[in-house]
Length: 469
Image 1: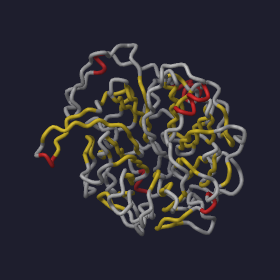
Image 2: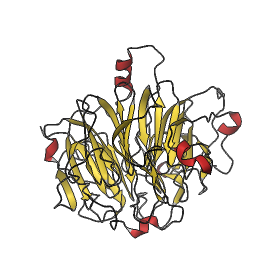
Image 3: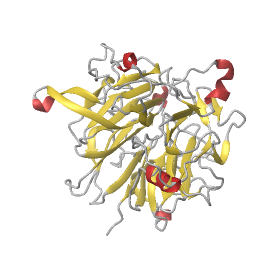
């Protein structure tokens, strides 16, 4: 069995506030884009869930990977421990893969017919199967279940079925090591249906917590809540039982809570008209130790670890209670001489210590830790607690962040078909540039190949590419 011990870059766990043990790489799962609002009409349940729970509506593509493989996460066999150039996983040539998910040291992919395949580090059963870890293989126990969405955390994996049920496996970790999977299960070896959940339309993973969103817009959280990412206070004497049980998030903003604090001047106060105790959220997103709640009027609430300003709220305080961020912000656009610029955030992804956000106009914003250039600002001198807009790339349709690097996929092919950009820490090859760091977004040469999806792992990158014509 591949072990994660001894594979960690020491700098990634300097901070006393990092939620890691000394044997764990600084990493997190990718955050998914906010879910679309649930329809109010009554449809056949199976059709509804198929429509709502498949956000990555991509044609089948080819799977490529690059970066560190010391724990088998490249899927290229036990003899391949690193790759600085993109490598194709030929195992998937006849599998018709349509979606991909990445944890710190493992990967799960979804085929067109709803089947799952996994590979990478399995010391805490994040693969949902036994057997060879350094090469892809089917996840166990889901043969008769069609899966439509997947999410990966640090040592946890989750899948959503077409009928709205959640299956999970692996374990959650805290600062002391293994925290548990359920109150009576430390590590779950194969997919386990979560009994508290039904009619789920999307599933999201942080490093060590999961968030589920229901068809009637309820939010359930569970896992490790050390940094407040579960959105609820849990007494120490029943911490494990209550943390590991999916529980509805009861937070409902009122007029006072929706008001933006004066100290957060970079987020202007949004009108509180129509905000009541009955108003609802329409989506969620996760970063490493953070959770974002997307309100129906456009306001985003953030909570969780913030020691490097990675929540983007203008401070470095830990927030156990959701803090409102308006996705419509005033931004001093340098290109227009400092004029007010309207920004509406539609997608958020993040690692333990840095975050990337995407607005509806395809612009990228970064904030948080920057000592490896992961914010793309051209230097690595300081952290940023407020969003910073990057001049490049433009026309972005997807972002991902993990470890100490960041990824963006653009919409068009104006750059000779190469629509992948990467930046940040690259010494392990995860930037597909030969093993160099990049402090600004750098376009990756793909020889005209088009990227459908890109996901960042702890120190590797997984891609779904359009097949060659």
